[in-house]
Structures are given as structure tokens and as C-alpha cells.
Amino acid sequence: MSDSTELYTIGRLARRTGLSVHTIRFWSDSGVVPPTVRSTGGYRLYDATAVARFDLVRTLRELGIGLETIQEILARQITVAEVAETHARALDAEIRTLKLRRAVLRTVARHRSTTEETLIMHKFAQLSAQERQQVIDDFVEGLFAGIDLDDDAMIVAGWMRELPGELPDDPTPDQVDAWVELAELVADEDFRLRLRKIVLSGSSEPQVEAGFDLRRLVLEKAGRALADKIAPESAEGGLILGRIIEPRLSAGERAELRERLRILADAQVERYWLLLSVLNDREPFPSVIPAFNWVIAALRAHG
Image (cartoon, rainbow, N blue to C red; front, side):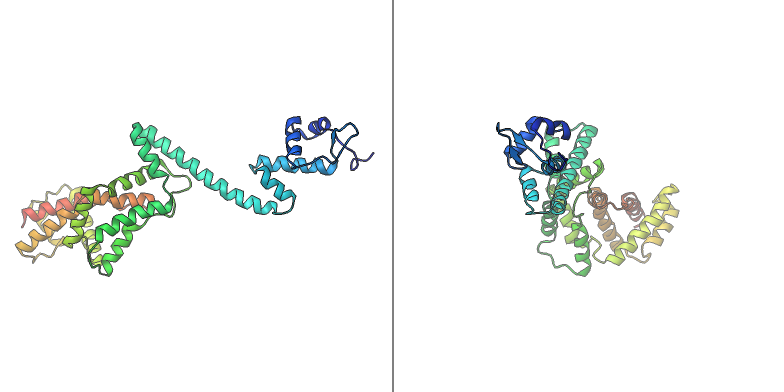
């Protein structure tokens, strides 16, 4: 008898395929691979085509595909390629979830978080991209509510909304930390009020180019003064101040600028931008707080 016409009992089929007798019976009874014929004694018998189908079913099951879907493939209602594409997308989602859980667990271990902190962290980290974006959108909309925004302010508002579509496939503990901290920060009413005050006072650098010029000068000149340990109240500090601001400003204008810079030199506001940089995988800007504080002290001393 040729191999193409040879019939196999369940025992012989198990030895040939490496499947258990129980599995073969289950797949057969489920209709996935029915017996080719039955012997006169009622025993199931399988031909070479059935053997090949068992091999295919085993392969698909090892890939995690369910029996119902496998039956559709065998009935040619869908193709293996279509199933593979769908299954790969599902596995991608599962892998992302597992990597996120791993990152959360590493963060919990590193910070020795309490049970409550762990629950909060897990909740925030599991939010969908749309839900995360909604948290930030609601925050920014509340921040600018009732304020007529010019083009520059709208640019700033757009920057404040900028989140990645998703956390990275393999988020680092720092990125999980950043999202959790950002979510907690925007929920802080005191932070909201301080940032709203910045917006209302017009000190949020509404003129984007002018704001960047001031920031650049502060970082460059005051930053160098800090590095050189030049005291802001010294005569040399006064000369450096004159290279940062317009020397002809009146005492009142200097006092106003000092107050604006004091409001801007908010560590939590700067932290907001830093967290966005971490989440968007961008190199964060250097801190302006020490340099701004140096200028504030220089204005106070040379006002």
C-alpha cells in the first residue's frame, strides 16, 4: 500500500506527528480534522491528507491561533496570510502591554512605591493614547479658557498639548515616571493656578521670538556668570546685566521685568516642559531657573 493511500490509527498518527492521543481525539471530535474513514470496528482512520492537516493545525496552534479560526482557514473562508496579519497585530498589542507592565514594575521596584502609588501608576500608564491626550487637552483648554490667544500664544498652547501618539513600544522606567508625574502635575490645582497667572499676566513669553531671544541671552550671559562665580550684585554683575536687558529701562520697568522673571522662574512649570521632552524622546532644554534667578538678583541689586 502506498503512503498516499495508507490509513493511520490514532496511535500510529500520534507516533508520526508527535501529538498526544488526547489532542488528536479532541481536534477530530471538534471537526477540525475529522477521520477519513472508520474501520469495521468503529476506529478512526486517517489518510496522508489528514496527517498534513494535523501538522498544519499544530503549527497554527503553536502560533496562538484558535481552533475556530483554524477551521475557517481549513474551510478556505479566510487565508493564512489574513489570519497571520491580524494575529501579528494582536501580538504587537500584547507585547506593548507586557513591556509597559515591565516598565511599571521596574519603576515600582526602583522607587519602593507603596501599594497606593503602585495602583495610581498602573492606572495612569495603562491609559490609551487618546485618553492620555484628553487629560492634557482638558488641562490646556482650562488654562487658556476665556483668553483671546494671538498667533504666538496659540503656538505655545500647541506645544503644551504635544504628546506622543503612544508610549514607546519598550518604555523606559523614566518614561513611565514622566507620564505618571505629568498626569499628577496637571491635576494639581495649585500648579494650574500658578500657570494660569503666568498666562493672564502676559509673562508666558507671548512674543515667541522675543521670548526665545531673552531666554538665549539669559542662558548665555547669566549662565556664564554663574559658571565664573560672578556675584549678581557685583559691579561686573551689573555690566553683564546690561548685556541681557536694555540698559535704558527705568527703575519701574526693571521692577516689572524682575516680577515677570520671578513668575517665569517656576520649577514646576519648567518640569512640565521637561516631562514632555522625556515623553517625546527629545533632548530636554537646559534649566533656565538658576540663570533667571541670577538675573532677578542682579535686577534687584542694580534696580
